[in-house]
Length: 183
Image (cartoon, rainbow, N blue to C red):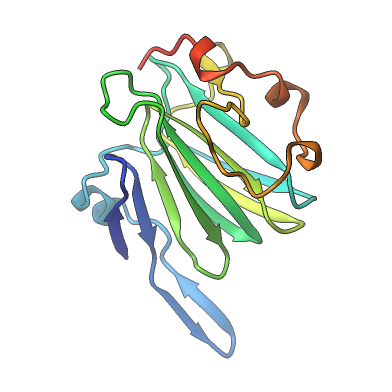
C-alpha cells in the first residue's frame, strides 16, 4: 500500500496494491496497521455506499460537526469521480482551500479525509459506485455542508451548474462565509 501526503496537511492519497490475473484481481484495500503507521489514527466504525445513476451527479460538500465529526476513507468500486476535500479547520493556514483528484476503479486510489474537512464529489461516468469508511456514526443533528458552487471556493468542477444533478438538500447548502463551523 502506497500512502502519500497531499498539498493540504492531513489529506492522504492511498493506493493499495492490486494483483491482476486472468481471473480478475485481488487487493487489500484497508489495513489498520498500515494506515496507523502512516499517521492515520482513526478507528472506522461505519461503511457507506453511494451509487449515482448519471454522470454529473454531485454529492456534497458534506461534513459532521464536533463532537460527531467524521474522518472518511473514500474509494471508487465502479466508475470515476472528481473528488473534493475543503479545509474547514479555522486555525489552519489552508482554511477554505481545497484539493481535487480523480478516483476511479482503474487508478484504484483512495482519499483519506480527516475530520475538519467538507467532502464531496461529482460522478464522471454513469452508474458510479463510491464506498467510504467513516470514523464516527451518522448523526443528523451534526450534519452540515457548504454549497458545491460557492464562488469563494473557486472549485473547477467538471460539470456546468445547469447540468449538475443534485439533491434538493445539497442545492440549498450555505456558502462557506455563512456556515457556522465548529472545527
